[in-house]
Image (cartoon, rainbow, N blue to C red; front, side):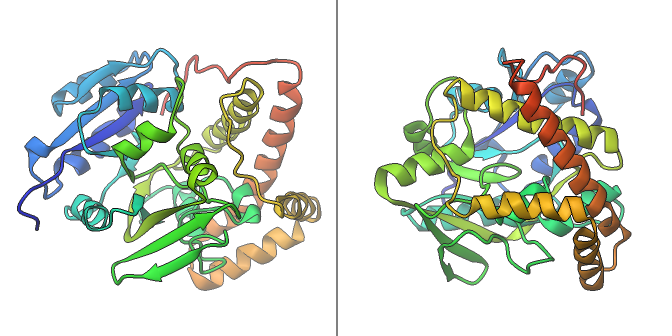
Length: 342
């Protein structure tokens, strides 16, 4: 362990997250890292459940998020953060072992050329709901990203953590990956650790889109280096609720289209081959059979019945993306957070 420890700021956007927040905060509190070097910032969008009471119980600094969205909350939290490093943790994340934070920080401290570190996988746990397990198996929360190849966690179908072209060096317990104008994966949430100076330099406005900071840096200097630590983090994504899965997919596309239309999403991370990913996704969903082929391939590699959610997950995602895109033509707004809860 180092003789001196850098200051770490955990930024956790919340909105009615009482059902999951305590597990996240307990896992952070259990880290083998000096407590006086860890800052907890809960950026709340107006919770009316026990979220704030739980946050206070663990000594979190509570900040109001007037923008309601997670991306708005991240920027509010960044302005408040005192740490040298920013850790973006969702209220439904759980860290499963106490050396995690040190493992994430150590390679960042050792290499001045890298800008962030991120777990290489979503931790699979037998006791989690089938949707959470499914997302851990494919390494993403949105199966559409599978067809683009831009996921950023280990995917058991491909045996890779991303399909975006990049340079990579294996340093033992972590990888150093360099991305350039060919594209960038969906790096930046669920346990991603950024150097604060990097975020301050490449983020502007009231919203912080983590992947856009990487794309902006690439546009500025040509490439960025990130670290993929060979560990994981739990993301209890929807657990067993198909209704919540539908709602989150709708939010994803509605918010993206709206933020793009108003100029908040300024830096494109689309690749020249993305059209093939779009077409493949649509064809697989129309034919259905290829989705079951993927399901059985996955099941042969990890025997978990959660794989059989894959065809439905893809069909529901295509439906919500189509509805969200059409709706955005007539209603220019982010998806309402009224009644939202984890």
